[in-house]
Image 1: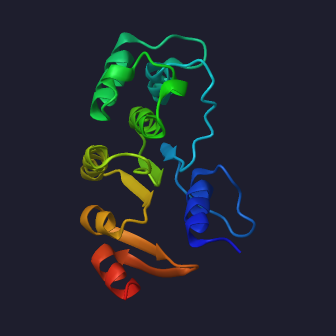
Image 2: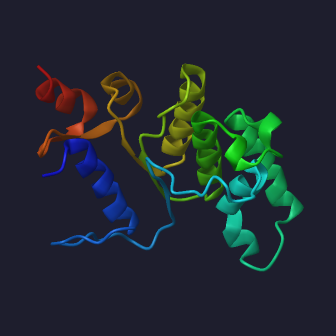
Length: 187
């Protein structure tokens, strides 16, 4: 049997289409979807800079065989500034701490301009100041009408920043307005 945190990560992976269900199906409209997994499978030894990693979020603009346009590079700089990595743009990803890599991956996600954003423990290994910055970005996405689905264990963050909640504890124990779900789900 899987732990509930595994179930939540598995649910996001199924929604993202990175794993298949053993039964049933997930139906989603053809919308741009961006996914920040809990554990990056990025080869940290691959010779790519932080700027190049972030720019990969905009690959739809330049494709496989073209260079990124200057307008994309401006957006890369803005995303890096948002997550506090301006001074690290020319560093190799292997030189980053785990928290810095998480911030770079979040910045890459920002460039994807997706309608649906899946976040699996997006604040893992980042400090409180960075968490506040990332939460502000999530709130901007909410205001823009984007769907943000996040796996979190910090119920205080859930209460203060997420209007609806699906609560798991080995099974679904509630879905709906966050205050109602958490009032019924916690002792």
